[in-house]
Amino acid sequence: MILKLVLYDNPILRKKGMPIDSFDDRLKRLVQDMLETMAYYKGVGLAAQQVGLNLQLAVIDVSGSKLSSSLLIGGKPAMVEEHMPLFLINPTLSYTQSKEISNEGCLSFPGLRIDVPRSKRVKVKTFDLEGRPWYFEAGGFLSVAIQHEFDHLQGKLFIDYLSAEQKKAIKEELEKIKRGEAILSVKETD
Image 1 (cartoon, one colour):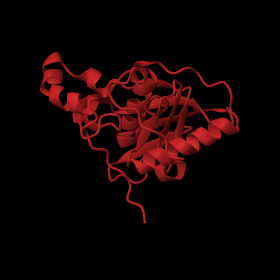
Image 2 (spheres, helix red, strand yellow; image 1 turned 90 degrees about the horizontal axis):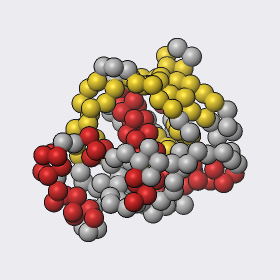
Image 3 (cartoon, helix red, strand yellow; image 1 turned 90 degrees about the vertical axis):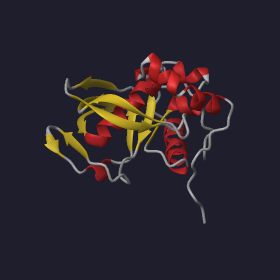
Image 4 (cartoon, one colour; image 1 turned 45 degrees about the horizontal axis):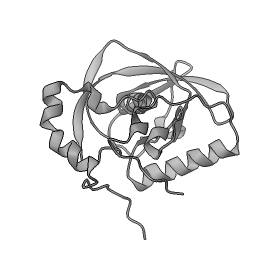
């Protein structure tokens, strides 16, 4: 089921998600609905806050991206595509000190793209749909997507990385989104 997207300035986007403590069929259904919603809106990541839910849950799928990603599981290289989609459930992150600038968009900010400083690599502890912990390290575009979605789970938005001057420069675009005048891109159906 396609869920309704929450757009900028909805207060839920500023809420830190509550931990998930029930790994049941409802969670699996929600994850499936979020994946369908993310694909429908042509996204690579979607946090629960973006569909109006205050949870520590995000879904990611970078398998269709041309941007380079890397994944280490147990310290060994793994094929990114084989581990997509990826679920972040009650995640914790460890960041590398080396940073790079990532040009990012966000489904809750249709049409807006901004440069955001991100760690080049990130170590992740999360849980699978059965509640089992698992650990991995990501680099490249996958690392960026994870950090972006993790920020959502903490109530932080990518515009929070902008200076006051930069925010002023995009004020009109933000106002259009608030007024519902921004256009969401959707997947074409047969």
